[in-house]
Image (cartoon, rainbow, N blue to C red; front, side, top):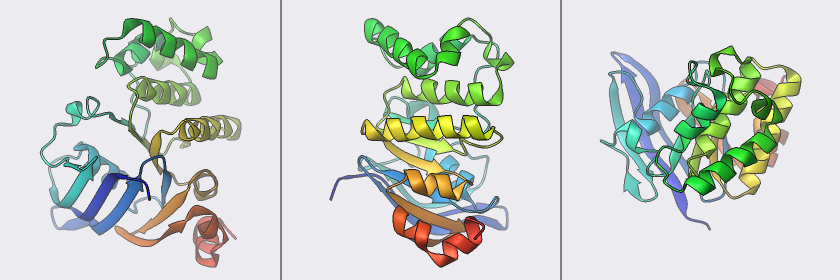
Length: 240
């Protein structure tokens, strides 16, 4: 069994008297693509924000270990140095910077200038639309183009663990297929991925294992292919 890159145990998150996450456990092992699926409001994004330390003021309990090191007390801006990157819901691109400048920001912890240029060329090959618009302000891009840019920017840091929060949200079916094609390609390169996604079918088709989250609890987990065939998952999340 491969090494655990991320291990979450007993994670609870409470906003005042409201518990958004209620003591969950999950594990992501090296090289895996893990899908965390569930309805809107299930607590998926809160879980990712707890991992990355980007929650607003609230009570967080439990343990979060990344590469056997606790993330408790870590500043979110130090995580990229630890090779942990996140593509947030809503993309989060630097709207008043060009596409190229956004990619350079993704590599701000690196000093290998020639390799950075090689990586920019690589992601321009993967996303030709970005190459065509390299000098364009990121804020003028379509939602799908911004998602491409946000993913490429995160990958510029050479992450050991990539967190993706709802990458298909608000995109056209053609763009969704392109984004998932890239997710599968990145996973095949050995990068460990934790994918939060409402499109359960696409997420489980791409994943090795899956977790189902409902009302702040993990209600099911297992092999992704088996979950696709599970009657409960099909009824609740696949519309069957």
